[in-house]
Length: 285
Image 1 (cartoon, rainbow, N blue to C red):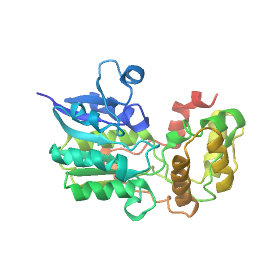
Image 2: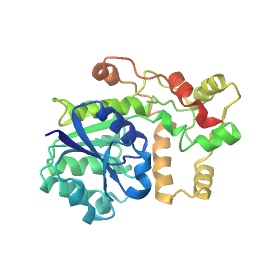
Image 3: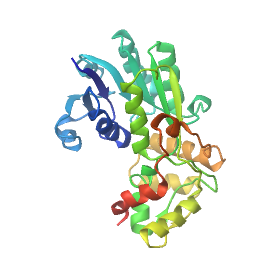
Image 4: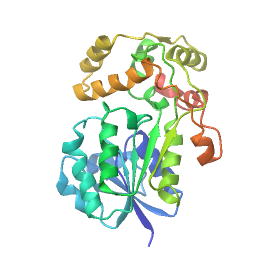
């Protein structure tokens, strides 16, 4: 019988890419979907799926039938960790799950203001064998959350000041996550994942201008302006505040760390921002 892995956040950036990576391994992947009828069209056709919702504990039991390992992604809208995430961790402990890979954040162990810190602490306290995936900022944030400003205004609207960031491609995160869940030797470890260089958003705008063949500018808005604009677009307050907390890390130069973890684990260089921009070019037109 093939080993079963439940992937939460299955339709998101890292979840979907992790599913694709796991499909190439000798494993059975179960996509956890909040709304199966609506979301099943967003995952590969041959992937099993199950209803799962952090806000509905009654969905937990059916979701992990036969499951040995779980890939955990915190939904961005759920910032109350104790209320929504801890119950699931407690449930997994009682069910004796063999490994829990959590998509965290680089530096989360020292940043008590982000939800990822609390989740890591709950997992450690639970005693479940874990792997903490701690990536730097996603390159794909530019092609999703911030794509509208780039597409419509040729502007990167992010409150990160002049701080540098060691951007990483989600596809690299997914490959490490699938490796950690499918091979021995990754339990009770934390992996800090970054790209091969740290760039500020002025440099990112310059590279984007070159790749997209049009002028892209970085406006560096105030935190208040950023909050107002994101709020007007319908983002929830807690989600915006988490974004602000994360971008403040970059603003103060705390996101420029470059690690060689990708090279060590994947035996190759990380995907470059130029490669990412070329591959996702259609997102900004």
